[in-house]
Image 1 (cartoon, rainbow, N blue to C red):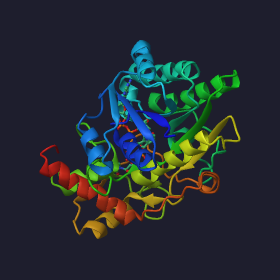
Image 2 (image 1 turned 30 degrees about the vertical axis):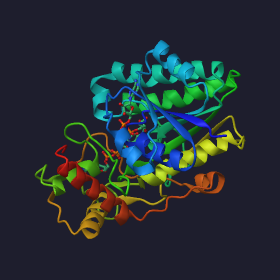
Image 3 (image 1 turned 90 degrees about the horizontal axis):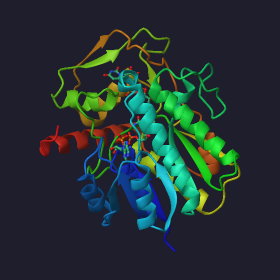
Image 4 (image 1 turned 60 degrees about the vertical axis):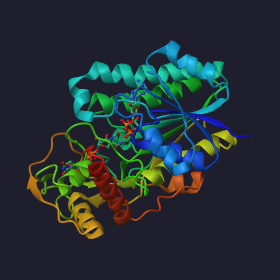
Length: 344
Ligand code: NAD
Ligand code: WQD
């Protein structure tokens, strides 16, 4: 029997790529999204890749009754992958209540509904942001959680605790927390990809928009960090590889393989790449020369972080596979499609 998975935030960046991988693995997908940070035509892109149009419900997960109506309409939902959230770190400092309300109420509503509708498990999108600047690198799942630097980061920590406390209290559900490092790239078909709103705050969309001539130059935030070339280091994980980790995790829940009430996995490559190395790799992968300049540090930036991903490799049987240059080529191909379509 085909399992049905509810993908919240499924028209978003990571949710759309995960929907594709779930469908290709034989799952039925129902997407719930309020389209606050995505577009409905993402469904066309998914359908072009897989030949299957996922069911779609435009619902705001803060609305308990509307959310419950989805479970009534699709009684076969047996698992949830919960991507839906507000995710801009800077905006969360300006609008903390929006972030606490959206990111926390949405999760609580789902957790309240799961037992009533016999939903077996939930995968939650957490983030390496919970580690802050780790004292020891690479960060493992046991690396201490640091006090969050932003309301956004705090919602990830609080949500992890809400899930753990709910299960501790006897809720019959299973949960897997995936702590993503820095997701980048687009589907190799370029039918789906990242769609930033306004001026991008993240490195890759800013970089590809600069390469396209939409932005004048990329500012590299600092070259005086304690790293080999002085620029910050991150663990950039290809969004398609990341999507596949969700399929492994969901299958683990569906096949009753989980051994802990809440399992936690780092999802990254296990390798750190500096901003300057990334720019070089982009130029090499695409043949496009990038206009950039070194500027001062960005407030709140972590100097260096990358993950130890041994647990995901061993237990989930998952591994990041795609070379960085291929990932950057996919991001560039997507940027070119956005230009062709006149979107960006
Ligand atoms: P995204 O903004 O592209 O996707 C999130 C989707 O959720 C959007 O389509 C948005 O419209 C929807 N949404 C937001 N609030 C909603 C609500 N109340 N009801 C229904 N839909 C709602 O973001 P993404 O990059 O795909 O991130 C997905 C998840 O992964 C988020 O939880 C994010 O915090 C987490 N995460 C992202 C990154 C990253 O760098 N992209 C890193 C670590 C963790
Ligand atoms: C990457 C590197 C910048 C833009 C954020 C969130 C984190 C997680 C992922 C969700 C840094 C540098 C960037 C630019 C630059 N999201 N940079 N010029 O800050 O690692 O993480 O997204 O959970 O919580 O904080 O990602 O893409 O913004 O930056 O030099 O124009 O690129 O300094 O070193 P970050 P990013």
